[in-house]
Image (cartoon, rainbow, N blue to C red; front, side, top):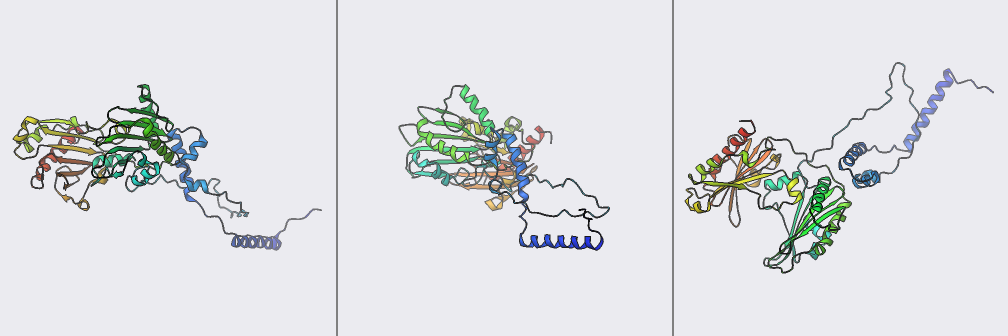
Length: 424
Protein backbone atom coordinates (compact mmCIF):
# COMPACT_ATOMS: atom_id res chain seq x y z
CA UNK A 1 0.00 0.00 0.00
CA UNK A 2 1.37 3.37 -1.00
CA UNK A 3 2.08 5.81 1.80
CA UNK A 4 2.16 9.51 1.08
CA UNK A 5 5.18 11.40 2.53
CA UNK A 6 4.28 13.78 5.35
CA UNK A 7 3.66 17.40 4.46
CA UNK A 8 2.79 20.61 6.26
CA UNK A 9 2.21 20.26 10.03
CA UNK A 10 2.92 16.51 9.94
CA UNK A 11 6.40 17.16 8.44
CA UNK A 12 7.21 19.84 11.04
CA UNK A 13 6.18 17.53 13.93
CA UNK A 14 8.36 14.73 12.54
CA UNK A 15 11.43 17.02 12.22
CA UNK A 16 10.98 18.32 15.79
CA UNK A 17 10.73 14.74 17.09
CA UNK A 18 13.94 13.75 15.24
CA UNK A 19 15.81 16.78 16.59
CA UNK A 20 14.75 16.03 20.17
CA UNK A 21 15.85 12.41 19.79
CA UNK A 22 19.33 13.48 18.57
CA UNK A 23 19.71 15.96 21.46
CA UNK A 24 18.75 13.29 24.03
CA UNK A 25 21.41 10.91 22.64
CA UNK A 26 24.05 13.65 22.61
CA UNK A 27 23.37 14.50 26.26
CA UNK A 28 23.61 10.85 27.29
CA UNK A 29 26.71 10.04 25.17
CA UNK A 30 29.36 12.86 25.07
CA UNK A 31 31.32 13.15 21.81
CA UNK A 32 34.89 11.84 21.64
CA UNK A 33 37.65 14.43 22.33
CA UNK A 34 39.31 15.78 19.22
CA UNK A 35 43.04 15.06 18.79
CA UNK A 36 44.54 18.05 16.99
CA UNK A 37 48.04 16.51 17.23
CA UNK A 38 47.15 13.41 15.23
CA UNK A 39 47.24 15.09 11.81
CA UNK A 40 50.45 17.04 12.58
CA UNK A 41 52.30 14.02 13.94
CA UNK A 42 51.21 11.72 11.13
CA UNK A 43 52.56 14.19 8.55
CA UNK A 44 55.82 14.59 10.51
CA UNK A 45 56.16 10.80 10.86
CA UNK A 46 55.71 10.12 7.16
CA UNK A 47 58.26 12.84 6.37
CA UNK A 48 60.78 11.25 8.75
CA UNK A 49 60.21 7.82 7.24
CA UNK A 50 60.85 9.18 3.74
CA UNK A 51 63.90 11.16 4.91
CA UNK A 52 65.52 8.36 6.88
CA UNK A 53 64.75 5.63 4.35
CA UNK A 54 64.31 2.96 7.03
CA UNK A 55 63.46 -0.58 5.89
CA UNK A 56 59.84 -1.49 5.35
CA UNK A 57 56.94 0.79 6.15
CA UNK A 58 55.73 -1.32 9.08
CA UNK A 59 59.06 -1.31 10.93
CA UNK A 60 59.68 2.37 10.20
CA UNK A 61 56.33 3.46 11.52
CA UNK A 62 56.73 1.38 14.66
CA UNK A 63 60.06 3.13 15.23
CA UNK A 64 59.10 6.75 14.81
CA UNK A 65 55.38 7.09 15.52
CA UNK A 66 54.80 8.98 18.79
CA UNK A 67 53.35 6.86 21.58
CA UNK A 68 50.08 8.85 21.95
CA UNK A 69 49.29 8.02 18.33
CA UNK A 70 50.07 4.33 18.83
CA UNK A 71 47.92 4.08 21.95
CA UNK A 72 44.86 5.93 20.61
CA UNK A 73 41.86 3.54 20.49
CA UNK A 74 39.59 3.43 17.49
CA UNK A 75 36.61 5.71 17.92
CA UNK A 76 33.14 4.14 17.96
CA UNK A 77 30.79 5.52 15.30
CA UNK A 78 28.14 7.83 16.71
CA UNK A 79 24.90 8.15 14.73
CA UNK A 80 24.16 11.68 13.70
CA UNK A 81 21.71 13.33 11.37
CA UNK A 82 22.84 15.33 8.39
CA UNK A 83 21.86 18.98 8.75
CA UNK A 84 19.55 20.30 6.10
CA UNK A 85 21.29 23.15 4.24
CA UNK A 86 19.41 26.40 4.12
CA UNK A 87 18.37 27.64 0.71
CA UNK A 88 21.14 29.60 -0.97
CA UNK A 89 23.90 28.30 1.36
CA UNK A 90 26.91 26.63 -0.25
CA UNK A 91 28.37 23.46 1.24
CA UNK A 92 32.09 22.73 0.92
CA UNK A 93 32.69 19.11 0.00
CA UNK A 94 36.26 18.99 1.41
CA UNK A 95 37.00 20.48 4.87
CA UNK A 96 40.22 22.51 5.08
CA UNK A 97 42.45 22.04 8.13
CA UNK A 98 45.24 24.51 9.00
CA UNK A 99 48.72 22.97 8.80
CA UNK A 100 51.40 23.75 11.36
CA UNK A 101 55.14 23.09 10.95
CA UNK A 102 56.89 21.18 13.73
CA UNK A 103 57.63 23.54 16.61
CA UNK A 104 61.24 24.69 16.86
CA UNK A 105 62.65 23.81 20.28
CA UNK A 106 63.28 26.85 22.48
CA UNK A 107 66.94 25.82 22.74
CA UNK A 108 68.84 22.95 21.13
CA UNK A 109 69.19 19.79 23.16
CA UNK A 110 70.62 16.36 22.34
CA UNK A 111 68.15 14.29 20.33
CA UNK A 112 68.82 11.39 22.71
CA UNK A 113 68.32 13.64 25.72
CA UNK A 114 69.18 11.52 28.73
CA UNK A 115 71.22 12.07 31.86
CA UNK A 116 74.69 10.56 31.42
CA UNK A 117 74.75 9.12 34.95
CA UNK A 118 71.43 7.35 34.36
CA UNK A 119 72.56 6.16 30.94
CA UNK A 120 75.72 4.72 32.44
CA UNK A 121 73.65 2.66 34.87
CA UNK A 122 71.28 1.45 32.14
CA UNK A 123 74.00 0.21 29.77
CA UNK A 124 76.32 -1.22 32.42
CA UNK A 125 79.30 1.12 32.14
CA UNK A 126 80.49 -0.06 35.57
CA UNK A 127 81.41 -3.41 33.99
CA UNK A 128 83.97 -1.57 31.86
CA UNK A 129 84.96 1.43 34.01
CA UNK A 130 85.85 0.67 37.63
CA UNK A 131 84.79 3.17 40.31
CA UNK A 132 82.95 4.99 37.52
CA UNK A 133 82.50 8.76 37.57
CA UNK A 134 80.78 10.92 34.94
CA UNK A 135 82.42 14.06 33.57
CA UNK A 136 80.32 16.94 32.21
CA UNK A 137 82.07 17.90 28.97
CA UNK A 138 80.27 21.28 28.96
CA UNK A 139 81.39 22.27 32.47
CA UNK A 140 82.06 24.67 34.02
CA UNK A 141 80.44 26.65 31.18
CA UNK A 142 79.21 25.86 27.68
CA UNK A 143 81.75 26.68 24.97
CA UNK A 144 81.26 27.03 21.18
CA UNK A 145 82.23 23.40 20.60
CA UNK A 146 79.58 22.18 23.04
CA UNK A 147 77.00 24.52 21.46
CA UNK A 148 77.82 23.14 18.00
CA UNK A 149 77.32 19.56 19.22
CA UNK A 150 73.96 20.50 20.75
CA UNK A 151 72.81 22.16 17.53
CA UNK A 152 73.53 18.89 15.75
CA UNK A 153 71.47 17.02 18.37
CA UNK A 154 74.55 15.14 19.63
CA UNK A 155 74.79 13.72 23.16
CA UNK A 156 78.27 13.38 24.67
CA UNK A 157 78.99 11.33 27.80
CA UNK A 158 82.37 10.65 29.35
CA UNK A 159 82.91 7.98 32.00
CA UNK A 160 86.17 7.62 33.88
CA UNK A 161 87.54 6.41 37.21
CA UNK A 162 85.85 8.48 39.88
CA UNK A 163 88.48 8.56 42.61
CA UNK A 164 91.18 11.22 42.72
CA UNK A 165 93.97 8.67 42.32
CA UNK A 166 91.95 5.99 40.56
CA UNK A 167 93.22 4.15 37.52
CA UNK A 168 91.26 2.16 35.01
CA UNK A 169 89.52 2.26 31.66
CA UNK A 170 87.66 5.30 30.33
CA UNK A 171 84.71 5.40 27.94
CA UNK A 172 83.45 8.30 25.83
CA UNK A 173 80.12 7.96 24.01
CA UNK A 174 78.61 10.26 21.39
CA UNK A 175 75.10 9.72 20.03
CA UNK A 176 73.80 11.49 16.90
CA UNK A 177 70.46 11.38 15.03
CA UNK A 178 72.31 10.89 11.71
CA UNK A 179 71.89 7.21 10.90
CA UNK A 180 72.05 7.62 7.12
CA UNK A 181 75.31 9.57 7.30
CA UNK A 182 76.64 6.99 9.74
CA UNK A 183 75.92 4.17 7.30
CA UNK A 184 78.00 5.96 4.65
CA UNK A 185 80.85 6.52 7.09
CA UNK A 186 80.87 2.93 8.37
CA UNK A 187 80.72 1.61 4.82
CA UNK A 188 83.98 3.44 4.14
CA UNK A 189 85.51 2.10 7.36
CA UNK A 190 84.61 -1.47 6.48
CA UNK A 191 85.97 -1.09 2.94
CA UNK A 192 89.23 0.15 4.43
CA UNK A 193 89.56 -3.13 6.32
CA UNK A 194 88.05 -2.44 9.77
CA UNK A 195 86.26 -5.32 11.47
CA UNK A 196 82.55 -5.64 12.24
CA UNK A 197 81.78 -5.24 15.96
CA UNK A 198 78.54 -7.21 15.61
CA UNK A 199 76.41 -4.49 17.23
CA UNK A 200 73.38 -2.66 15.83
CA UNK A 201 72.52 -2.67 12.12
CA UNK A 202 76.04 -1.92 10.84
CA UNK A 203 79.25 -1.33 12.78
CA UNK A 204 83.03 -1.07 12.59
CA UNK A 205 85.72 -1.28 15.25
CA UNK A 206 89.45 -0.61 15.48
CA UNK A 207 91.58 -1.32 18.54
CA UNK A 208 95.16 -0.19 18.99
CA UNK A 209 97.27 -2.59 21.01
CA UNK A 210 98.80 0.28 22.97
CA UNK A 211 96.05 2.88 23.33
CA UNK A 212 92.34 2.89 22.44
CA UNK A 213 89.41 0.94 21.07
CA UNK A 214 87.08 2.96 18.81
CA UNK A 215 83.75 1.72 17.50
CA UNK A 216 81.14 3.26 15.20
CA UNK A 217 77.58 1.84 15.16
CA UNK A 218 74.28 2.60 13.42
CA UNK A 219 70.97 1.37 14.79
CA UNK A 220 67.86 2.60 12.94
CA UNK A 221 68.06 6.41 12.63
CA UNK A 222 70.79 6.68 15.30
CA UNK A 223 74.56 6.76 14.89
CA UNK A 224 76.76 6.39 17.93
CA UNK A 225 80.46 6.03 18.63
CA UNK A 226 82.30 4.66 21.63
CA UNK A 227 85.95 5.24 22.48
CA UNK A 228 87.54 3.31 25.32
CA UNK A 229 91.13 3.61 26.45
CA UNK A 230 93.28 2.79 29.46
CA UNK A 231 93.97 5.46 32.05
CA UNK A 232 96.56 5.76 34.80
CA UNK A 233 98.85 2.88 33.96
CA UNK A 234 96.34 0.15 33.15
CA UNK A 235 98.30 -2.71 31.62
CA UNK A 236 95.63 -4.35 29.43
CA UNK A 237 94.05 -2.08 26.78
CA UNK A 238 90.36 -2.66 25.92
CA UNK A 239 89.38 -5.10 23.19
CA UNK A 240 86.25 -5.51 21.02
CA UNK A 241 85.05 -8.29 23.33
CA UNK A 242 85.38 -6.00 26.35
CA UNK A 243 83.48 -3.02 24.94
CA UNK A 244 80.83 -4.99 22.99
CA UNK A 245 78.36 -5.64 25.88
CA UNK A 246 78.14 -1.94 26.82
CA UNK A 247 77.69 -0.77 23.23
CA UNK A 248 75.18 -3.56 22.55
CA UNK A 249 73.14 -2.34 25.54
CA UNK A 250 73.25 1.22 24.15
CA UNK A 251 72.03 -0.05 20.77
CA UNK A 252 69.08 -1.70 22.50
CA UNK A 253 68.20 1.57 24.25
CA UNK A 254 68.31 3.51 20.98
CA UNK A 255 66.37 0.95 18.94
CA UNK A 256 63.20 1.72 20.87
CA UNK A 257 63.73 5.51 20.93
CA UNK A 258 62.16 7.73 18.23
CA UNK A 259 64.07 10.75 16.90
CA UNK A 260 62.47 14.06 17.93
CA UNK A 261 62.53 17.34 16.04
CA UNK A 262 66.14 18.53 15.91
CA UNK A 263 67.23 22.17 16.12
CA UNK A 264 67.37 23.99 12.78
CA UNK A 265 70.24 26.49 13.09
CA UNK A 266 69.81 29.78 11.20
CA UNK A 267 72.04 30.46 8.19
CA UNK A 268 75.01 32.74 8.84
CA UNK A 269 77.77 34.43 6.87
CA UNK A 270 80.16 32.42 9.07
CA UNK A 271 78.94 29.06 7.71
CA UNK A 272 81.82 28.75 5.23
CA UNK A 273 84.47 30.76 7.06
CA UNK A 274 87.81 29.01 7.52
CA UNK A 275 91.00 29.87 9.36
CA UNK A 276 92.64 30.85 6.08
CA UNK A 277 90.00 33.59 5.71
CA UNK A 278 91.22 35.27 8.90
CA UNK A 279 94.53 36.82 7.88
CA UNK A 280 95.16 38.34 11.31
CA UNK A 281 98.64 37.08 12.13
CA UNK A 282 100.08 40.57 11.74
CA UNK A 283 97.51 42.04 14.14
CA UNK A 284 98.19 39.33 16.70
CA UNK A 285 101.91 40.02 16.47
CA UNK A 286 101.43 43.78 16.79
CA UNK A 287 98.80 43.83 19.53
CA UNK A 288 99.80 40.93 21.75
CA UNK A 289 103.49 40.25 21.30
CA UNK A 290 104.93 43.62 20.36
CA UNK A 291 106.04 42.41 16.95
CA UNK A 292 107.27 38.94 17.86
CA UNK A 293 106.34 36.57 14.99
CA UNK A 294 103.42 34.19 15.51
CA UNK A 295 102.52 30.89 13.88
CA UNK A 296 98.98 29.82 13.00
CA UNK A 297 97.70 26.29 13.53
CA UNK A 298 94.39 24.43 13.57
CA UNK A 299 92.87 24.60 17.04
CA UNK A 300 91.35 21.11 16.67
CA UNK A 301 94.32 19.30 15.19
CA UNK A 302 94.50 17.21 18.39
CA UNK A 303 90.93 15.90 18.03
CA UNK A 304 90.66 12.29 16.76
CA UNK A 305 88.81 12.37 13.45
CA UNK A 306 85.85 10.18 14.36
CA UNK A 307 82.86 10.16 12.05
CA UNK A 308 80.48 12.16 14.22
CA UNK A 309 83.14 14.78 15.00
CA UNK A 310 84.05 15.10 11.31
CA UNK A 311 80.50 15.42 9.95
CA UNK A 312 78.05 16.68 12.58
CA UNK A 313 79.07 19.75 14.65
CA UNK A 314 79.56 22.96 12.66
CA UNK A 315 82.52 24.61 14.40
CA UNK A 316 85.94 25.94 13.41
CA UNK A 317 88.91 27.15 15.39
CA UNK A 318 92.48 28.31 14.96
CA UNK A 319 95.24 29.81 17.07
CA UNK A 320 98.19 32.14 16.66
CA UNK A 321 101.10 31.47 19.00
CA UNK A 322 104.59 32.88 19.41
CA UNK A 323 107.40 30.70 18.17
CA UNK A 324 108.93 28.63 21.01
CA UNK A 325 112.30 30.38 20.83
CA UNK A 326 110.64 33.80 21.08
CA UNK A 327 108.10 33.02 23.79
CA UNK A 328 109.87 35.07 26.44
CA UNK A 329 110.11 38.17 24.20
CA UNK A 330 106.40 39.02 24.50
CA UNK A 331 105.87 42.52 25.92
CA UNK A 332 102.31 41.87 27.08
CA UNK A 333 102.79 38.49 28.69
CA UNK A 334 100.12 36.92 26.45
CA UNK A 335 101.68 34.21 24.34
CA UNK A 336 99.01 34.11 21.64
CA UNK A 337 95.30 34.00 20.88
CA UNK A 338 92.76 31.44 19.68
CA UNK A 339 89.53 32.05 17.79
CA UNK A 340 86.67 29.55 17.65
CA UNK A 341 83.26 30.06 16.09
CA UNK A 342 80.02 28.07 15.95
CA UNK A 343 77.71 29.33 13.16
CA UNK A 344 74.08 29.65 14.26
CA UNK A 345 74.97 29.48 17.97
CA UNK A 346 74.23 33.10 18.83
CA UNK A 347 71.64 31.76 21.30
CA UNK A 348 74.46 30.43 23.50
CA UNK A 349 76.70 33.50 23.88
CA UNK A 350 77.35 33.99 27.64
CA UNK A 351 76.05 37.17 29.26
CA UNK A 352 75.82 38.63 32.74
CA UNK A 353 73.91 35.56 33.90
CA UNK A 354 77.09 33.58 33.23
CA UNK A 355 79.34 36.07 35.01
CA UNK A 356 80.34 38.00 31.86
CA UNK A 357 80.53 41.77 31.51
CA UNK A 358 79.37 43.76 28.45
CA UNK A 359 82.11 45.37 26.33
CA UNK A 360 82.11 47.42 23.13
CA UNK A 361 83.49 45.64 20.07
CA UNK A 362 83.11 47.24 16.63
CA UNK A 363 81.30 44.93 14.23
CA UNK A 364 79.61 42.75 16.87
CA UNK A 365 75.89 42.69 17.64
CA UNK A 366 76.79 42.01 21.28
CA UNK A 367 80.07 41.42 23.09
CA UNK A 368 80.88 40.11 26.55
CA UNK A 369 84.15 39.56 28.41
CA UNK A 370 84.72 36.85 30.99
CA UNK A 371 87.49 35.11 32.90
CA UNK A 372 87.40 31.63 34.42
CA UNK A 373 89.76 30.69 37.21
CA UNK A 374 90.60 27.05 37.79
CA UNK A 375 93.99 25.44 37.66
CA UNK A 376 94.91 28.46 35.53
CA UNK A 377 93.32 31.63 34.18
CA UNK A 378 91.24 31.67 31.01
CA UNK A 379 89.94 35.00 29.65
CA UNK A 380 87.85 35.49 26.53
CA UNK A 381 85.76 37.99 24.59
CA UNK A 382 82.50 36.43 23.36
CA UNK A 383 80.85 37.93 20.28
CA UNK A 384 77.38 37.46 18.88
CA UNK A 385 77.49 38.40 15.21
CA UNK A 386 75.07 37.27 12.48
CA UNK A 387 73.60 34.52 14.72
CA UNK A 388 77.09 33.12 15.33
CA UNK A 389 79.08 32.73 18.54
CA UNK A 390 82.70 33.84 18.09
CA UNK A 391 85.06 33.40 21.04
CA UNK A 392 88.43 35.19 21.09
CA UNK A 393 90.50 33.65 23.88
CA UNK A 394 93.84 34.78 25.22
CA UNK A 395 96.67 32.28 25.39
CA UNK A 396 99.03 31.60 28.27
CA UNK A 397 99.62 34.72 30.36
CA UNK A 398 96.23 36.40 29.93
CA UNK A 399 94.79 37.91 33.14
CA UNK A 400 91.95 40.16 34.19
CA UNK A 401 94.41 43.05 34.03
CA UNK A 402 95.45 42.56 30.40
CA UNK A 403 92.32 40.94 28.93
CA UNK A 404 91.34 44.33 27.43
CA UNK A 405 93.94 43.60 24.72
CA UNK A 406 91.55 40.97 23.37
CA UNK A 407 89.06 43.67 22.31
CA UNK A 408 91.11 45.12 19.41
CA UNK A 409 92.04 41.53 18.56
CA UNK A 410 88.32 40.65 18.32
CA UNK A 411 87.71 43.70 16.11
CA UNK A 412 90.50 42.55 13.78
CA UNK A 413 88.88 39.11 13.56
CA UNK A 414 85.49 40.55 12.64
CA UNK A 415 86.98 42.95 10.07
CA UNK A 416 88.93 40.14 8.40
CA UNK A 417 85.88 37.85 8.27
CA UNK A 418 83.62 40.61 6.91
CA UNK A 419 86.14 41.42 4.17
CA UNK A 420 86.44 37.75 3.23
CA UNK A 421 82.67 37.21 3.09
CA UNK A 422 82.03 40.36 1.07
CA UNK A 423 80.46 42.30 3.94
CA UNK A 424 83.38 44.66 4.49
